[in-house]
Length: 256
Length: 261
Image (cartoon, rainbow over the protein chains, first blue to last red):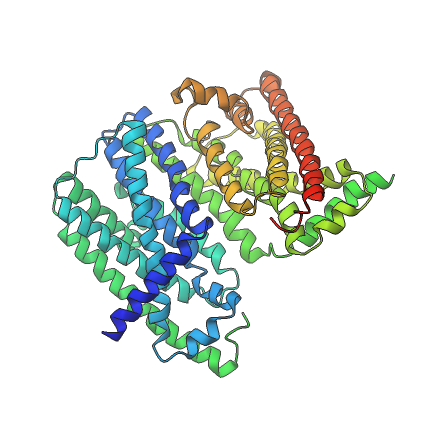
């Protein structure tokens, strides 16, 4: 119960912080709209059988990933800059329980981005969004947010020894948009790219959201998405233990 | 002579001082790898949508990505000085403002041109786009002009940074508008009329069109009009940017707001 409370309070606290940051709040909402606009124009002008609904859903999930990737990479680094990292590490709960709500909050901002992109497409480009399974659609979004937050958490702890972690976070924005099949079917990508797509939870989250929207069965995709998310959290915890152990031994927590 | 020194030496030293943090750890992911992925993303979106060739997206995105170094670096010219508490010392100096500000733009233009040229070369190699070797010198010129033109817009961005705290945010917004409006990814004919009108006045639009024609084998002479227009657009933005910088400087003195925003 204490763990759930800690995660919930941490999530709420960071949501409040993000909502007051123009870069992480306003910026993360409008940034994907530029890419969505390009995608809408390109798909509208092209002769692909994949219509604007395909582009709209893909562009919407792009926004969710942007909200996570650009900020999660530097999440732990930011605590270091604020001078709060040592205090947070010294608290009795495991540090992963402190960091995970941060990236979950970032991913949650993506829901707003997703809604904004879908409405933007509807009102400016006349894209009709007919969701066949509304409950499964909502569930797929929640599952995708959780897995995005988990992937962001794994990024945050993996990049911690890298001084310019924020630059790596930015770097992963485009590749996941591309490899995750948000706007490009995986079949169009080279064969060697597909296994990379399969280990990325966003690929399965995107599939689940699309399937729920068009009336397919999203449950398998959603299960894989959540499973991979759990795996990221587990990996992140193991990395956190190792990183903190090394940092304590060398007294290097605030150095890199 | 002093102005010439401020223009060249001052510009170079300032760039090194304000961008000491731009180490390979940051430069490579942000300005070498990221533009390649932008090219790949839009080339594959184009394939998925069945619109335009790979060459269209390689040329468009390579040139447009010069906006990142040009817009952000010019903003840093003001924001970085403020962060280091040297902005007031710079503005109180008797140095003439044109060499002071424009000299800082030269390294920015060169860096922007490098980023665009490298992206073009890498995108071309990865996607197997065929650009004639004879077009390379003319393409280099067009890239340089495009970087200059966008740096003009960056100067306006820098001036606004004297008032706007979230200058990185503003740079992102400008980058996004350039992505949509310049024809980097959407053929200009597919844009509504009012958007095409705006496109005509933006950096990159004419340079990208000229570069695509050069890549298709056109001569430099045949795109001279487009290149000339791009230069004029760059000069116009630089002029407005300079005037705005002076205006903001005066306003900052009057309202003692230099270090506040």
